[in-house]
Image (cartoon, rainbow, N blue to C red; front, side, top):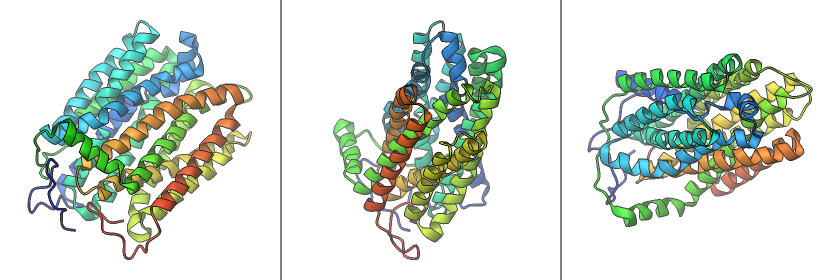
Length: 422
């Protein structure tokens, strides 16, 4: 598909550059490098989630207060994704990601040394701010470096890498936390993230589709962001990101508390194994991306939302087997929808793609911070069933929004969008 006309103040790909083709060495290095970036980012971002009950007991705080170690990290990421995207427009996607991942790694190694709860929260906030340099920039980088025909598949591969990162961090933290406490868990995750960051730096190839632009000032930035926010199709995806990520994090934040109490009374190491459900997201994020060429992004995204709702309904049962089965379906459906939404922003936005992706991530992580924390208040007051029902309502609201704003089209004749197929 031909490139959109250049827009003042926004980067466009160099003339003639069509991107690395799937199967090429550079394509493979991009996917592998960004997968490691996903491990480094999401292992650190949620490093305390698997040990929240231990952390709450050790510091003598409530479940909702313990969850602030997640919420403040995601708030830090949310408020910096847009500044990072503008910086990346000036210095390059790879350099910006390198800076962010390096600073975050250093901060992560300092977290276990926290001498107070306030210091812990401050370091987690700063760690999240540094990690803001990865998610949105990675999607913009993919859209510039990979052929348009494979942009959705590449985005799905990146999201699959993020699920492995989140899983690895939690599986490392759970056993370490039970044996030696939450500080040891945080240190183990930080070491894992450091190794992944080094792999990213060694693998990711030099950008060929990036053209630097001069600073456009606050007025230019506001014009770019305002244009995206006035695009109803992008706005629907931002709403989806806010509501679904918020519900997703709430489920994983507080399910551990439910399983650690009566009647299940599971130990922390066993509870950390619930994060193996992330493997379903690793599969469905790539599977969903591959189905877009056949069924269209809209239909695949709505199917993902339906699956997540059905899975969450299973967790209402008092059976551990049904709870775990429901969590697998819920997680798979969520990541299927997320991989489509994340990649779709770059396809809809013909200019300012880094900023379009940053707004998606802003909504995504604000939802994680606000709903992920508020879910704890609901859980503490009314229990798991109330929390799960609330998240199901959010999923239904999301599905209605997407279905209304993105009308059904024939997959054989998708709408023309800069950046990829529908």
